[in-house]
Length: 347
Image (cartoon, rainbow, N blue to C red; front, side, top):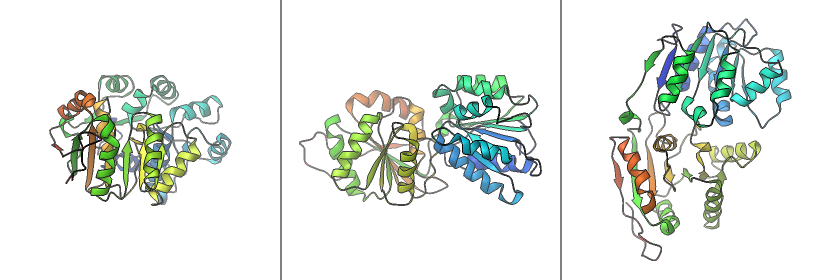
């Protein structure tokens, strides 16, 4: 395996296919448990992903007695500083908090042997390119660097060319991005008819655990309130909430206290929650790859799942761009054409 051999790797992988294990297991095998310095560094775009990756890597390194520390904003930096001072071999974190710790001179990357850029395209989309470069310049030039991304575009390749040495490329074609074990459906519906259509889908399919994606924070909160009035156990999730509020919403959803999560794309990356049967795109994403990141929250680790997209007439162009990116079938289902028409069965 290239990572175990110490080679640099560019990996493009479908979400939910074990990407964290692909870089996490070789990392813990290559580090020295007796050396109490930071030897492994994983950069993640979001707090939620950093926590999740750190948990998984800690599980991989449990019997090698490697200490893994997640670092991210919105929580006590003093506690993270204390943990670093006590000795940590692997740091998993968001670029902003890692830079803060570097500037305070409590995080030292001089002993780093392995660097991983996880969800690299997302970090670049979020404007982290300068932060990433700041961090990489403070790690030894002789190191192993791997980059994992759902999509590999020109911007991602520029980072690879600048900071990696003869990387092994493990890529899939754009037509293989969509998950094959997932049933993908769409309904063409007027914008005013979307809420009624959504309620019909939830009832017809007896949806038990689903994430519903909206484009904006305002729409996310409004839709969650509408669904709550209908009696659903639902919570909104977007970047406007505090970290504690976001953590509570995710925990409640994971533990079954909520059966619906209405989210912006802050939740489209990295969330690994078991038992999600449906992803519903209330709004069509303008950026086609976001569609695949969203629907990747279901049909994970070999399980089945269903993705349903509500397409208004003004969103047809964006939706056609999505269909052009994959050869998998997105099947049209009957829909409530306008708010005054009678309810029809979807399946």
